[in-house]
Image 1 (cartoon, rainbow, N blue to C red):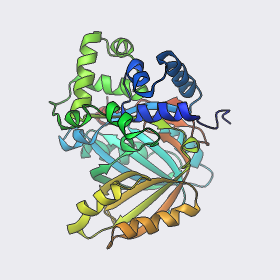
Image 2 (cartoon, one colour; image 1 turned 45 degrees about the vertical axis):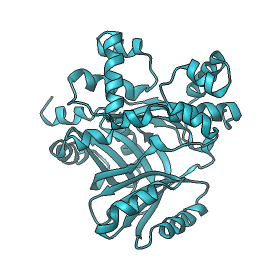
Image 3 (spheres, rainbow, N blue to C red; image 1 turned 135 degrees about the vertical axis):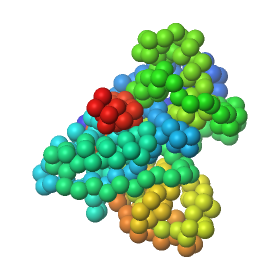
Image 4 (cartoon, one colour; image 1 turned 60 degrees about the horizontal axis):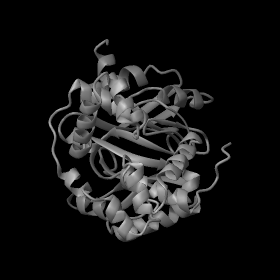
Length: 348
């Protein structure tokens, strides 16, 4: 059990600031919040050491759009008594970014990142298919990502503070970048372990210079090749329950409907998917009772949407490369590396 069970006003403001600008310098954040930089750095160290908050980084939708990546959601069924062992084995695999033990018609819900469809197929049939304790699996490919966790906020800062921390963000999101180099891949893996790592630490991990790492990190962020976000343990968010909805929308209204849903406060993910349903929605809500109220809000906002299935995350075993305990606090890291799946499939 964690001894960190609440965020005070300063902690909340700090987390919100880092959600907006995860790699901003302490001086900048201190200026916006009107607090001391040393105090903020000390506060962040306390939060991160106790697993209450952390900075994650992962390949962004821009990579898939450029043909550099493949994202899939995989439902896994486990043999009786083997779920925990299967979950732990899958959480240790670098191409599996998220593992959740969920309620309903599947035991585990995975988010898997690979380089392409071939690598995904090899991983599903060879690595996942041969894993002891796995009885069946169903794969749904992700299409358009309309919103994801890097856009979720605590919403405690004033609009003027948000604007100051957001300066230049829209321009960065519109920037384009070339194909990834081997150095870029090593840098993405290093950032996934700690999205706020210093340029010196990143240079040591990647075997290159600080100036090169600084330039390449900016390029990755500007192009949308990576997404970076400040995470918080769910109990500290006042929304400790993660609800998963599978929905069907008429094909000619998918984009409009998805963008409407993506704008709702509780929504952490809204993605187009293949399979029996064409939208996957994940939200953080206040209680299990609130799951039904979430469904009412979603269908009210999106006439024509039919929710075909739903689940509640019982234990977020791994989230964006970070291992969590049963209460949702960070306890370790397995850096995301979707390129490992391709190498394994080639016998590497």
